[in-house]
Image 1 (cartoon, rainbow, N blue to C red):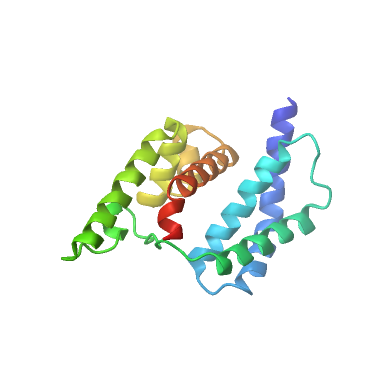
Image 2: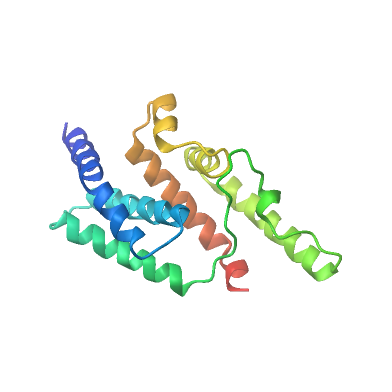
Length: 175
């Protein structure tokens, strides 16, 4: 029963803090897609932190601090690509355009192969939510209702997938 109480507490915190946190992030970031990504990252971190032995003491302050850190990260790191919001897009749709330049074509094919390989390494649950959310444009609520898996679990799975993919694609990000 303890896990159920924790899940309920997490869901209540997300419901209570979501609007305030969205406004906070929105006052510093203009792109609504980026706002939602940061918001999602913050709540993923909260879900993970909530499962640790040492609980978060001042939830609002903790969430704001994590949001500040994500905003700083956003401006610190160059982005590899922005995945469009439209549902049903394939990886080819957001990769750099193929070029007559053999070096660019090679780099594109290497990135594509590395992404496919990294995606295939994910546990099936993480891969499924990543594809559903990023490429099919489905919401976490939609997937939760369809699968019976809690939104918090889906958020955590997606977070682990993103961390794995970022780690695997880091050399492309650095270049």
